[in-house]
Image 1 (cartoon, rainbow, N blue to C red):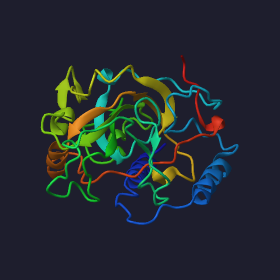
Image 2 (cartoon, helix red, strand yellow; image 1 turned 180 degrees about the horizontal axis):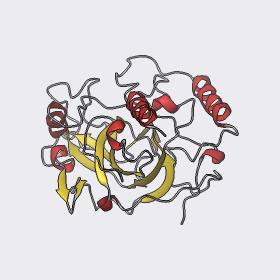
Image 3 (cartoon, helix red, strand yellow; image 1 turned 90 degrees about the vertical axis):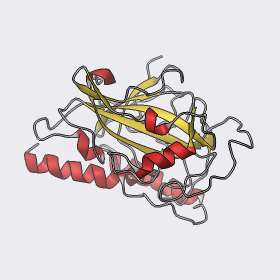
Image 4 (cartoon, rainbow, N blue to C red; image 1 turned 60 degrees about the vertical axis):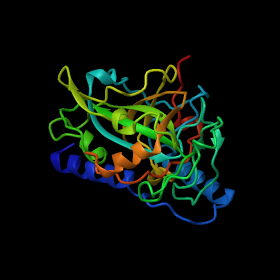
Length: 283
C-alpha cells in the first residue's frame, strides 16, 4: 500500500463514518428495504474474500468466516486515535436487545435500545437541543473508543488512526453502550472521554470497568455506508454487555468542545447476520 493509497483509504474511512450524520425525520422503511440491503451485502461479499464484519449479536457465538487475523494488543498498549458514537447501539446483546425499528434505511432510527426502565426524572425533557439531530433523555448511544498500533495522535474521523509510516496498523475498538439521562449525578461524558498520555500511549483512562466482561471478537469497521458492501478493515472488538447512564448535559458540553470535531451521533449499520460474514466468538 503506497502513501497515496494510504491517504485515500483514510479519507474514504472518514467519509464513510460521516456519511449519515443528519437524522432524517421520515417514516420507517419497510422490511423489504432492509432485506434488499442484506441481499446486496451478501452479493457484494460473496466469494470476494472479505474478513468478518461488524456489528453483530454479541450473545450469538457462531460464525464461519474463514479469514483470520491476529488479535490486536490490549488497548493500553495502543494509541487512542478517535472517539465517536452512534445513535442507537450498533451491536445487539447484553442489556441492549430491544430493536428500535428499521429507521430511515440510512442508519437513523434503527439499532438497539437499552432494555431497562428509567425514572420520570431521568426522562424529563432537556432544555436545549443536544447535537445536530437532537439527542434526548432516554436515547441509547454506542460509543467507540478506537485504538491503533500506529504512532498517531487522537483526532477527527477514523483517518486519524492510520499513518503513512505504518500502512496496516492493528485496530481495536473498546465499546461502551450508554443511555442518556437528564440527571447531573449520572456519569459525566466529558470525563468518560478524557484523553491522557500514559506510559507513552494516548489513552481514555475513564472507560467504564464495571459494565461486565467485554465480549471480544474479530470484525470490521461499521457505519451505514457498509449496509450494502463489505468493510475492508480488520478490527478487534471489545464490547461491554452492560449499559451505563450518562448525563445529557455533559454530552452537550462534549459536543461544544472535543478534539474529534464531533457534533452529532452517527447512524448505525444493519446488524450483520450472515454466518459467512461473522467470526466465531470463543466461549
